[in-house]
Image (cartoon, rainbow, N blue to C red; front, side, top):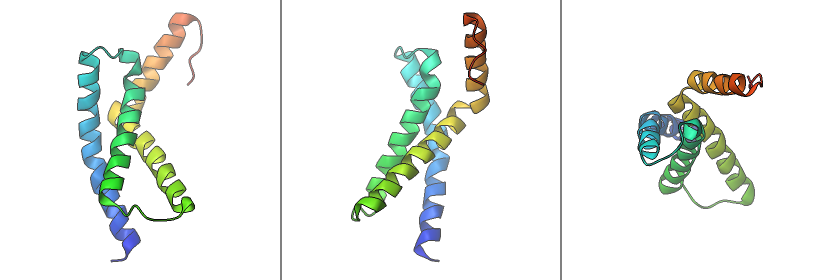
Length: 109
């Protein structure tokens, strides 16, 4: 098994708990006063941060600037994907559509 396959497997395995942990953290934040409309954004931010922290903790921190740029892009894309999976893309779309109807806008989707 080469390094790329092993790294992809570890990333996939790390993503499964993220989809479980992030909603719990968002629910905790909502109970502490986070407005419900920001739950989706909070899920994406929390997933991105947890993904980055896990990668830095488990990964090699050496490398040139291009390697770090790729890692940051992976964190951002992974955080977006896992955050939306945790929050539920369809529930976020429905909430934004309702908000658009209330304000006279058509919403963003």
